[in-house]
Length: 204
Picture 1 (cartoon, rainbow, N blue to C red):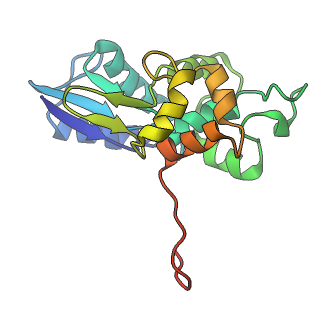
Picture 2: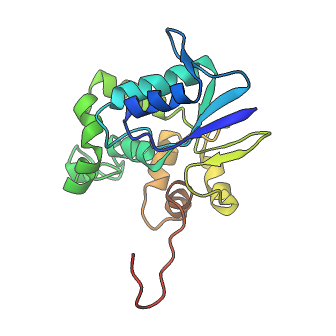
Picture 3: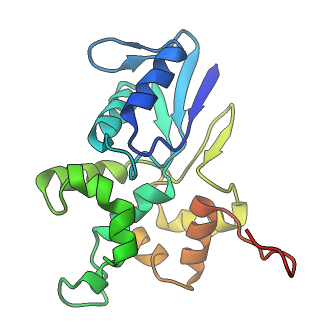
């Protein structure tokens, strides 16, 4: 089995279709069909930035639904869920009361998605539900896949909160959104990677 690992599409559906065609995938009228003995693996960050958010999601999920591809969640899918979920510690709908605050920076990062899929719409609710179907990591007979960092200690912290397929629940989303908590740090490591200070005098 040849796994075609495709990462960080970020709403550029035209580039995705170009890549699939170059790899030998053929659209059968419903979804892109892989060449013999190939399978696609989308490594997260399907959304934000590009101008073809909906088309990207439709291409990817058609392949997932047809069983010809797999996917793992990126930090942008996680952020979309947190942006749309009220923090239960607050009573009311204030921009500061969502798990991911509706501040200028977060709105700017998410604006391409919301321009096509308006916040609170039926379409928005549909795609949020579908994002919940994407596991945080995937372990198969041929390889292990995660968006940023395969860290077994962090995964052990997250595992009891997740579904049997390593997918988020709303409760897991709430727990991992609480800054400076153990679940938050574990989620950050798995979906965003490891950060370490540079030696004195160096910057990036």
